[in-house]
Amino acid sequence: MHKNKDQLYEDIKDLITKNKFEKEIKNRKKEYDDLIDENTLALLIVDELGRNKQNVSKIADLEPGSECIVIGKIIGISEPRNFKRKNGSSGRVVNLEITDGTGTCGLALWDKDVDLVKNKTVQEGTSLKVVNGYIKDGFNGLEINVGKWGLLEVEPEDAPDFDDKKIDNTKKIKGELVEMEPTRAFFKDSGEFGFVTNIKIKDDEGIKQLVIWDEKVKEIQRFKQGDSLIIENFDMRQKNGNKEIHVNGKGTIKKL
Image 1: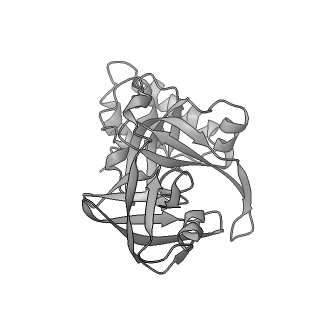
Image 2: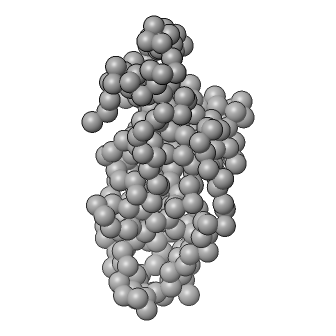
């Protein structure tokens, strides 16, 4: 259960008066056009003062349907996109890829936050802290969304020194395609269609199940049961305590 602003103030009452705390919340609420609730803004203030006692999650431990605090470094940025929502309003989104040394995942920035990319406030190599991010199965697998109740900190003071060498980008699976499930379609938040399927590969270690996303779904359709494949640059995800292998836009699927 998340703390409310009064409970959060107890963590910083030796650093700031209650009146100043409340005034800062009101100023920030106005700055965000009343789109961020007071408890979330209070959490951001506590975090900036170095008293945030909520744990920072590892990307390898993230699961869809939960909220998180994550610190990661940007290793990829897609082109920002404009779209129409179902209610007819216009929206913008940009998809990032971040890593924290334990794994990688997507990070979706919406509407005003897209300007952070356009004005180069954030770019490849920038460290970000996501407070109250919402985790979902997104465009290319596991994705953190910075939505209505989420906030970003650029180059946070508590960001670790990320070591790129800890990220294994040479992962490979070599084996026989033994099963391919029918493709499933779904609506993305942008209103576009997405596609996903599951396949099973048999290698020297046994049977591995892989989750294949979007354009990689089209690629896998070229192969048939019994083909020997090599799959590279996949992501490891955590779901219900089990590790999953996800192949998205950066992955490669080739026939041996």
